[in-house]
Image (spheres, helix red, strand yellow):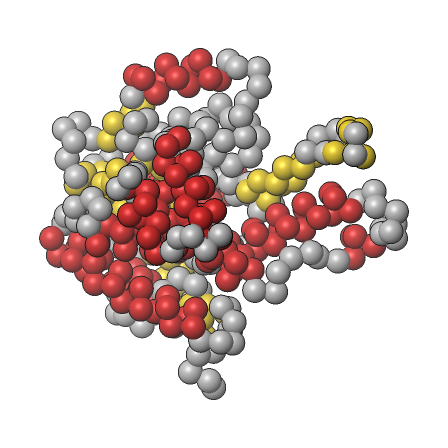
Length: 373
């Protein structure tokens, strides 16, 4: 077997933290509604040649994973997070976004969005035989590589998020899944269509369990107050809060959730998550066809369908200013496609990406460009 055949989309170093012995792991398979104890860890979350038969992408991810594993080990040892805008902060932000964009679920979502968009574009094209679109899927052979390219280009925009380290209280455990980075947006609960968890969204919340005891939480600091005294490490003392975070993890999973022991209460968590799971990964909608001077135009929108679990946690509350903003915005007759968290950062990011595409800037200078201008 070639050395580079098995490509893991959730790293083994990560899953080992949810394993009692480092070689096997307990999982609950959601489609089969089956609890499997001591499954082989090395056979989890991989596809043959998932990142392509050339080894560059897999090797680059492996190098980054080595750094991430080192930092996560330090977080567990010190029960503390690094300073904002340090090397550790940059590396962990990069990991959070690339982990979100490198899974099988992410690749399938991208292809589902592509399929929905182009079938809407082509549905009335006279060159397309009637019914033929139902027989094909439109997408990318290596969608995950495109998804990873998007992640690498956009990860710096989450570096303005604040972060906390959550500690599971006694008798509780965090679970993981084959889609371990999960997002929510309590501020935007009034938005009825489309995703509200894009990287630039106002009110964004991102969660990554680091182990059964620790969870990394990134959030929009202008929208939420987390904890009572601004502490960096927060014990999640109420078991119900841990359960809610685990329900979001299970609702977002593609197939499997992973857990260490019965303290995770995984059967109840999965049962609670079932009503939030998405029947489809993406949704496409189209506005009316309108005649223009040059022909016809139509607005077509594609969006990720995300589980909305109405997440409310005892240690997070909306800022008064954010509540007032939400109450006013929710009454507006026309809702925007996106409510940007940091307008200046958003525009700088777009500007730098365009400069890179014109060959007038280097992509590796993006973080400096965003946060030092």
